[in-house]
Length: 302
Image (cartoon, rainbow, N blue to C red; front, side, top):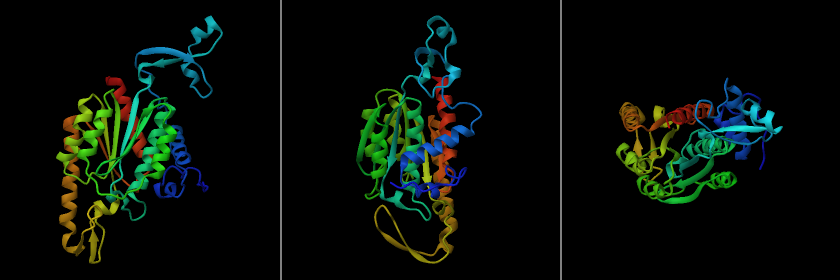
């Protein structure tokens, strides 16, 4: 796979630039390293939670976590691990339904799988167990969370294609059976479903004690409806086509979209689910900062 050079400082900012780099691990590392370097404090969790155990120091560990008292007794380096560091389960459920292929500058699927790769790389660095599920109207692929599955996750993301219609409720309810151990489950989708159906779909996952984060990925044109010329618009899920005069329907369309987004956000707040709207022009570091803040809060409240 080629890795075209990217301007320093811009490589983890512009999603369209990142999409031209077909090596997902390189992209994920670039984005995450940029985010971490931009933080004034370490994004690794455990600074304010209960101590769990020691482990041997390995190159790359934060030296601030070396237990110098133990070193003084043993002449060996040990790192303090905290309760939040002990191998949490982390899974991404990625929507690969046909509507995710849409994008004027960058497809929603390309944006979403790059985001998924960045999240997977981030938690892999934290030694968490990483898993992935691809779904449309059914479960396309499932990789259970494991400390050894990072490469499998990247390969699956690289192979992902948006080819079939989607139905969020059925596959997510089946996937819930695999999440009996408490962890963090991230759902990345354009959520082309009624809000009630979305929250029915994630209900069994939440019921098993998992913390759920929803990343709602849309193309800017889907929100702004900036089209001007009459044209035939295709429903990417069904293939149906409908002639549309944007000037006549634009205001109504935008009102319906905003109502849909508001209801998703409202239901998420009411049910203790974290929800973030992203568009494919938004730098990926926004989503990662959001994830880090959510993870930090979840760690403190457990």
